[in-house]
Amino acid sequence: MASDWPPTLSPEHERALLALASDYSLSHGLVLRPVPSPADHDISQTSAIHAPYSLFPSPFPARLFQQAKALQPLYNQLYAAITADDHFLEEVVGGAVAKVDEFQGRLYDIWKTVKQEGIRQPISLGLFRSDYLIHAPSENKDAWELKQVEFNTISSSFGALSTRVGEMHRYLLSSGLYPFHPSLTPASLPQNGALAGLAAGLAAAHRAYGKDDAVVLMVIQDNERNAFDQRLIEWEVVDKHGIRLLRVPFSQLRTTLSLAPSSSDSTSPAPHSLLYTPPHPFPSSSPSALTPAPVEVSLVYYRTAYSPTDYYTPAEWSTRLLIERSRAIKCPSVAMQLAGAKKVQQVLSLAHQLERGVPSAAERAQLRASFTGLWPMDDSDEGREGQRRARDEPERYVLKPQREGGGNNIYRGDIPPFLAALAAQDEHKADGEPKGREGYILMSLIEPPREVAQVLVRGGEAQGRRADVVSELGVYGVVLVDEERGKVIRNETVGHLLRTKGRESDEGGVAVGFSVIDSPWLI
Ligand code: ADP
Ligand code: MG
Ligand code: MG
Image (cartoon, rainbow, N blue to C red):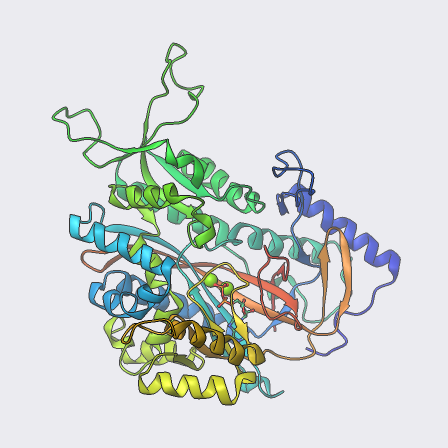
C-alpha cells in the first residue's frame, strides 16, 4: 500500500471520526475493564473503556489471507492428531522440556497421572488460533509469504472483540467519514465469524457431552480486564444456543468443584461427573434450600491456566488435576495444551515429523510452506546449528521459552548474554541432566512489510500517524476430537484477528498494551 495512506485528516474530521468510533465501541461491547488506580485493590465491575483499536482497517494481501484461512483445517487436524499421539507427546514434551521447565513438567505429570488411571473423557475441544506475520524481504508483493508465528491451543482470546472491530470498520466506511480510496469498499472487508463460530464450537462440545441441563464452566483469571471478550461469547452461548454458562475465577474452584461418587442410583450423575456447587444459592434453586445444589459440568473452557502465574496457589494445580480426572469435556485437555508447546512447533519443522498427523503429501507441503526457520537448542545436529546461529548472528533470531501470553521472548542481541546466563546455571547440574537452553527454541525473525501506516487509538486518543506498523493475522479454528481414537468429530475455520503494533515493539500482545485490534482490508 502506498505510504500516503491513511491521509492526514483535518483536526475536526479526525475528531468526528474518533467520536463515532468511540460511541460504536462503547455501545457494541468493544470494551475492557479500566486499569485499576494504585489505590484500588480490585478492578472496577461497573465501568469500561474502549478496547484499543485501529481507526482504519489495514491493507492485507487477499492471496495470503485466503491461504491462512485454507491452512486452518489442516492445522486443526494436525494438532488433533498430536493431542492423541501419546508417543509423540512423551518424546517431545516428556524429554528435556518437562525436566528443565517446571511448568511444562507439572502439566506433563498431570497428563501422565490421568493417563495411568484411565482417561474418562476422550473427547476434547480445541478453540485454536494460528498466528502469522507476512514475510516481506523485498518490495515485490508477489514474493511475500505467510509465515506462522505460533499456534495457540489454550485460551485464544479476542475472537469476540476482533469480530466487533471488523463490524466497526464496516460501519465507519458506511458513515462516509472515511477518506476516499477506490479499493476501500464493503466487499474488500471480509466477514468475521469468530464470535459466532467459537460459541458454536462450545455448544457442539456441550451437545457431545449429552446432558442438556448440564452447564458450561468458563474458567477465568482473577481481575480479568478482558472480561467483555469473554462475556460476548457467553451471551452468544446462552442466547443462540440456549445453554447455561457459568464464568468463574480459577481461584473460586478450590472449594466448589467435586467429582460425583459411584452410585447405584440411576438418577444421580455418572461416577466422575464434574460437579460445581455455587458458593451462594442460585435464585432458580428452591427458596427453601439452605445448601446450594450442585450442577453437572459438561465442558470446562479455560481462559486462564496457560501461565505459571495463573496457578495462584498449589490449590489451582489440584483443581486442574481434579478437572482432568473428570468426565467433563475440556477445552483444552492437558494433552491438547501440551500439544501447543512451542517445542512441538519446532519439532514439526524437522524432516518426516508431519507424516504422523497429515497423510496427504500435498497438505504437508502447504503446511511446511508456512513454517519459518526453527531450531532446537539441544545437542542434536540441528541443536548445534541452532546454538551456532544464536551465537554468530543473533540479530536474525528470536529465542522462545515454553510460555504463553506475551512478554517472554528474547530478541536479537539479548540472546547471547541470556544463553550465557543459562549456561552459568547449568554448571551446578549433575552430568547427564538436560541443559537450561533445551527448554527454548530458536526461530528466524519474520520481516513484515515496511512503510505501512495506521492511526492507533487508545483511551479515545489517536496516537498520531504511525510511520511504520506491523500486523499479525490470527485465524481461529474449532476442532472436536476423540483423543482415544484420534478421530476428528468437527473441524472448522471460524474467523480471524488482526493485531497491529508499532514496528519498534517486538512483542504483539493487545492485553499487555503493545498492539491494537485491527481488521483486514483485502487488497
Ligand atoms: P506468545 O505465546 O507469548 O504470544 P509468540 O510466539 O506469539 O508468543 O511471540 C510473541 C510476539 O513476538 C508475537 O506476537 C510477535 O509480535 C513476536 N514474534 C514472535 N515470533 C516472531 C518471529 N519469528 N518473527 C518476528 N516476530 C515474532
Ligand atoms: Mg501463544
Ligand atoms: Mg502470540
